[in-house]
Image (cartoon, rainbow, N blue to C red; front, side):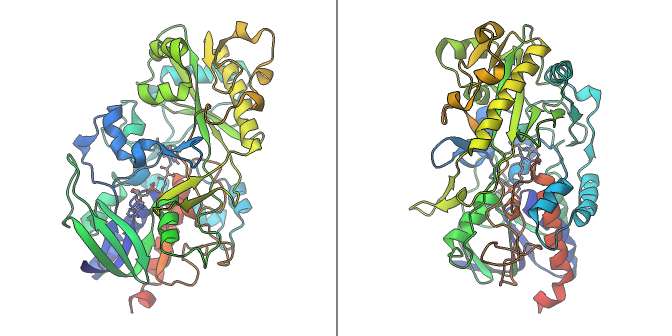
Length: 501
Ligand SMILES: Cc1cc2nc3c(=O)[nH]c(=O)nc-3n(C[C@H](O)[C@H](O)[C@H](O)COP(=O)(O)OP(=O)(O)OC[C@H]3O[C@@H](n4cnc5c(N)ncnc54)[C@H](O)[C@@H]3O)c2cc1C
């Protein structure tokens, strides 16, 4: 076992870890030694081929980490840059009302506002122009307007977008502003050490144990050889994401002291639904996601967003078999797509736990309210598709998955798609927005950290990732995670004299 000594260790390099690395980087000039330990590889720009099967390596479990009962697949990154490598760049601020509802003493929407403003500048957040509107976006807007739904533009963090369309397979042009494009290069330039393929397995007081594995082909090697290491530091910042950080703390025995650890997970359960348009439409041009409709965000609680996915993922999302699947996939170039994003409640029983091998398991059940929201959303999405000019639609929870207006036989869409026909494990539900597990709060009996991300009772241990959320963010979460990571960094900088001695 090799022992290495640092002042600050950051575990994970996604939205949270990457932001902390960037913010703390100036401390290197004061003589501090800082490293980022990242379980995944460091992929260079040339690696991003946009080929679906090859890019599965960017994700943990090939992008389909199943929940305990297999009814949901979770998608999150395992590479330098974390999930910001494959995120779409949708940039929403945490709504003030949600911040208030979180009720974390010491965390206010006015504090977050200044951080959002700063981050939006750094990440080049823009309102997409008409040149980024592809056919799917245009038809979504037209369909919504025809049935009286409001449509808003989605703010995006992109620079000189080359319109390759396959954003969720990693950006081949590095135009999407994730931590691998923005914060990590700044940190590395300032002298923060980036250590890829380094999985932290255990955490002890002011030290972690980790294993550095072989550099995968096509990725860049770090400075450390394959083997076991013990890293010592004055401050350890965990930023492995909801699954990574919660499971690491569970494995290291923190549950006894923090009963809420791993619990109250929210995921924004999501599904993608399709309409078959009579003509070919080009959705790989422009940007996949520039419009959304917020009309049902309060009740029954969902967003409808434009989307575009690749052939393999699409064939899974369709939930069709045999000739219907063949029919829909033969019409791949005619497909309109809408992503349904449901707001879920933070419930104690929805949690990350460990299996007998001490590997993380996502134990999550859809609530009845979420199922009702999914059914209502599919009825509304069908209306949008038909209004936009589609002849057939694909709704996995409908009486008939692939149907035309004639199949309704006079039934209202809301009566054709109901919780009775919503069959768990048949309806393909996914999540890319994992939140919670180490929620912020006041006391260790119902939370893991304080409002600054410091683990209760441990002055040397901080958390800076999506696991901090006490409840769902309601909106796409990355900007809020970065803002919380900014708070963690600020706290570390302002208390530096104390923890350095
Ligand atoms: C396909 C997709 C699209 C998305 N689109 C959007 C969007 O448009 N807008 C938005 O707001 N959000 C989006 N998200 C969600 C957003 O990317 C995540 O919420 C955010 O990146 C989570 O940040 P994090 O720091 O918690 O974790 P991550 O960004 O997931 O980073 C965690 C990192 O820690 C590493 N790690 C974990 N455990 C260990 C360990 N033990 N040792 C060492 N390293 C470890 C992981 O390998 C990973 O790289 C999307 C996500 C996906 C997957």
